[in-house]
Length: 397
Ligand SMILES: Cc1ncc(COP(=O)(O)O)c(C=O)c1O
Image (cartoon, rainbow, N blue to C red):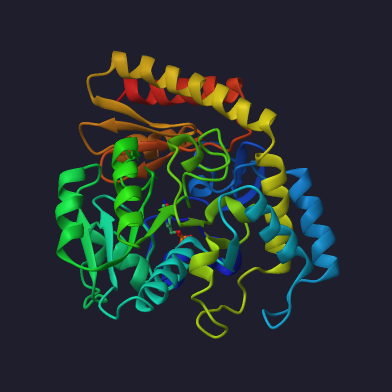
């Protein structure tokens, strides 16, 4: 359905059609709900693709936005910023990392991590530039991150891609070993819990193998926690639950509370290979985004908050398993924490659209999975309501 909005403009006439979208534009959000220009409300189980962890218009974020907006909106990375320091020191305090690079998005974080890995590897050998990633991964849309994204559909029509990117099946240790023996690698990049690729959990022994091989061969192991990190699985970072510690971790999406913010977290050893001028960005570590980022970390790292995420994720997963038991069109319930997926035997596009018509926002992952990534403030009543709509729609398909 086309929506006529301000100045009588049809959005389809003015945007490059990079997204498949329609309906009335969204105008407002509050808590678990979004509201469109026609006044219709939606229970938001997509959270802006795993971004709005504190829901919409959270009072602490609104306060940080106002306070920092009045103080300083932009300076430059020619100077340190007060809120940058506050945010970066929280990332260091709450992770394995000693050093942080700030940017604006997930793809930029991965781009930076790949560059850092190559720069650090170049000190050992100029041939040590290869990057390994895994099937169904998603790392972003700029050329480095796109090249690491091991899904051919995202590459079509955009060649030639940069040299040195190689792919191996996710969770297959033998194939990874064979691929790693073929070239001199600078980096291995992996989502320990894949989102876009269909909600797939990395096996712990697979991650352990990557860790051991990376250490033995001086390869940077990069965990992309852009979607699965920041509290979504019931710990601040997902790697904490795997027991495998990377050399670099990329974060973005929820970390800026809805403002564009990304980060590379890394060890001293990697940071020591980077000099002024090697990499940078005008907006990375924006003062307002960092003020919100600190609020996000303070709220989400609270053990009580994380315990509630775990409790509600068990509750949601249990409900989804019950639906699975009733419908043969469902292949599996997958994922961990509040990054859950229902994989269907067929394309669930029509189901997702019908759920939207009925006031529930869900997101597709890969070809046949419906993703449930609600704000982490979700309550059991919200889950009950979402499941009622989902099952009602499913029963009529
Ligand atoms: C795991 C992962 N990495 C990277 C990205 C790219 O992030 P952005 O869209 O902020 O560039 C995404 C986005 O979906 C993602 O899920």
